[in-house]
Image (cartoon, rainbow, N blue to C red; front, top):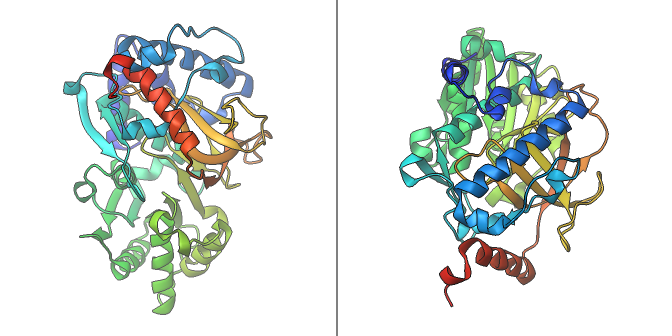
Amino acid sequence: MSAFVAEVTARVHQLDEVAPVDRIIFGRANPFAIAKRDEMALTSALVADYVRWHRDHNVGFGRFVGRFEPADGDDLVASVPVFPIDLFKQLDLASVPNAEVVRRFRSSGTSGTVSVVPRDDVTLARFAGSMRVGLRLLEPWLSTDELDINVEVVSLTASPQEAGDIWFSYAMALGRAFASSEFLVQGGVFLAEAAADAIARHLANGALVGVVGPPALLMDLLTWMGANGRRVRGRDRIVVLTGGGWKRRIGEAVEPDELRREAARVLGLDSLEQVRDCFSQVELNSVFVECAQHRKHVPPWVHALARSPATLAPVAPGTMGLLAYIDTSARSYPCCIISDDFGAIDPEPCPCGATGTTLRITRRVARSTGSEGCALKIQHALQGPEEVDG
């Protein structure tokens, strides 16, 4: 366990009253080993407490949910009001005083305005904890017990200082909390040769190597290494973790299977299982990591549901819809959101053996005036009629 997570875990267990979500994130048990029936009951209880807390601490959210009172039952989470992530571009949705906000993080934004999400110490600590929980899915290729002992991270991202308030870069740079990290984007320039040198050096020194970054820069690294005869024999000593999608380089995107095969070829990996993708976004406060079957697992403190884009009603498992989340780790803002992603909840248990909901994300939603109108209506509810400009 890293010194950072160990310190946070120790502080949590010393508290007189520990929030149930913290016991799961920072506890010693594996959240992906909870039986399905127990997981559903746990998630429902967390969501009920979560909605009540934000209703009582966030005036706008309290106005939005109105008299909604969470009750026991399997349909609890499906009945919680959710709002479009566009509202983070228009409103300050903080549920804590400004003095407690450590930083307001921004989405990287491919066009137009960006989301701004306030995070306090508790929310940031829980996000780091969710990263460590997600890394359990990388075993046996990367053991969480070895993270701060024998792992070197080659990060195809900027340093935390250079990342500033951009959430994706900051979140990827949090790998430094678990293992020694070297950042290979400097001054906005990706240093492919230096990244290749770092991988070769760490392998020669006997370390486990984590290569972390967006898929576009991973492809840039693989292309440069191939063109310059710089293949390595990583065998079982390299794990590759991508995240963030292709963003401004969507026209260059390659299929995940192709990217995995190319990484395995150039880096000399023993298995395609050593190349995984993860998902998060600035409005979420947790990371969904792929298992060996390349299915993204949702931790039990997050509820994920696909909803009809026309009615926002829940759709059947396996059916495509807009993905909505309730992330109970987000204390500083209400994370009861409808995303811009189409996807589906996988109904079958995962062959990897880990429990929990798994999901597939297929594409971003096409913008329309209808969705903007929906967001505007909810904005009026959050602000109150007296506060909305005419």
